[in-house]
Length: 281
Image 1 (tube, helix red, strand yellow):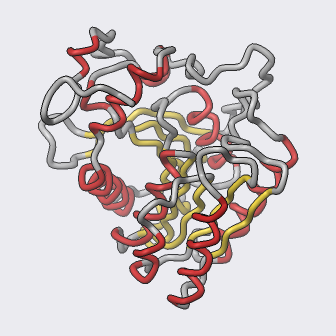
Image 2 (spheres, one colour; image 1 turned 180 degrees about the vertical axis):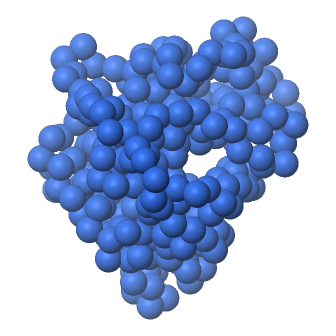
C-alpha cells in the first residue's frame, strides 16, 4: 500500500521525482517500469502522417498537452481519443496513435498526468508512479476527456460527429466512464480496464463499449467481468465483452512480457470493426 504524506495525497515533490518541465512527448521512449529486454515492439512508419503536439483548453491554469497522429492532407476524418496506462505518454502509446492514423483516424493521446510535471516514462519504481496516478481524480480526468472531444469537434480535419475512445489498463476504465459522461463519444474500446464500481453504473452508458479482457489477468477478477456482462444485459446496453482464455493483463502491450501477439491482433481487428459499426468511421 502506498503511504500518503499529505491529507490530500502524496505530491511529486514529496518523492523527489525528476520533473519533466518542458521535455517534449516526442522525446519519451518506452516506459522503463514496464519494459521487457526481450520485447520486440511494433514500430509504425510515419510516412503519410502528420505528427504534432497540441495544447487543449481545459479550464486549468496550464492547458492539457496531447500527442496527435493523423492522415496527412486535407479532409475530415473520424477521431479516436487514446488513453494511456499508468505510465503516461510513451513510445507504445504514440505508436498506437500512429497505427490508428494509418487506419484513417485522427488519434489523440492526452497527457492526463501533466499537472504533476513528472516524467512518468522515465521512472522504474511503482511506488513513485502510483501516487502521481492517484492524483488524477475521476472528475478531473473525465473533464479532460470532455475537453479533448470538444477540441476535436472544432478541428478542420475531424468529423465532429465521429469521435471514439480507446484505452489500456488505467485507460480502459476511463473509456467506460467516458461512454457514460461525455455525450460526444460515439463508441469505446476498453482494453483490460478495471471494472470496480462500473457495473452499478451500466445504465448510464449512452455509447456502446467493447471490453477486451484476459482470463489470466491477476488484477481483474473474472467475477467482475461476469458482473459487468450481467449489468449490461440487464440495462439493455449494446456493449460487448470478449475474454481471451490464455491472455494476462496487458496482452496488447508489445513492449512488455505480457504481450500476446495473436490476442493483440484479434483485439485490434475487433476494435476497428467496432468503431466502424458504431459511427466512428
